[in-house]
Length: 363
Image 1 (spheres, rainbow, N blue to C red):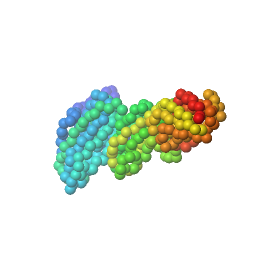
Image 2: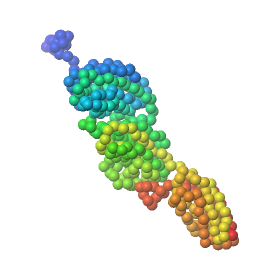
Image 3: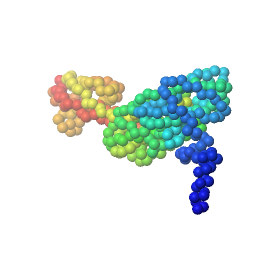
Image 4: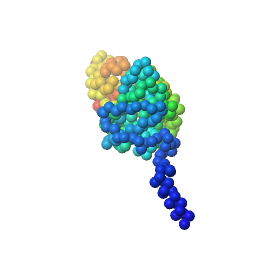
């Protein structure tokens, strides 16, 4: 009887508005911070206006029917004003996955977020604003090779494929939260040669840390290494994978505003050059086709099995070399291969197969 009476009182209270049901959001998010139920669906490439009211949060709902990049545009402000905004993106479950602080004084602001297919909520909040309203719009670009928020930890890393460049956007360091780390996961094969590429560290006025790490290497490890336990290479490095498994591309915006970058790991398949040999007096001139501007190694011997062979290394991008001090009237076997020195370990190189063997009888 007491349970029935309590249930009746609760029902009446809810009907009368005395006790409103509390929405359930993700951990760390309160109802005061996220009144997502006030959000209205927004169309792309349409101007909207928000009328600011103190520190009130304004909510927008956007639906993506495919993976891509969401552009959030805030209009140009009075250059004499001090306009600061917080822009954040939440999942449909109320999980905040991206945030940025925007300084719009004197310029329009474009912010980019890589997102998977789904429904998202975008919050706008103004600080230090001296204008009653702001015009904004959303745009969308399909992209199947872009970073997907959140990717701030290894277990949230974006899956990358070899030989595919991915578009990412470095969050700024002014948001007051740890939103300036990007992680990508990629599977590489032991013994295969690769090149890690990321242009995030090339932007002037930015301080960015870019590394490709092994699956057990900590993010604060900076020394170049090809050991399986402490693997770490920098952007632009050619390397030989020490194990088959997962590696992590790590990008950190140590200081700076948001900007776009490209990142990826390319497989290095060095091709064997095409070779020709001409005889000289006690010498032989070896020429070969150019292969991707890599270095070359020339090997020659007096037997077809290249036992006791000698080697000439060519480091300055030449495509020919003259081998001197050979024995006259002697037949020599010659072959050439291209190679790329691994920047992280000076004693290792990535090699192509040997070219077809050529023979020459010295004059």
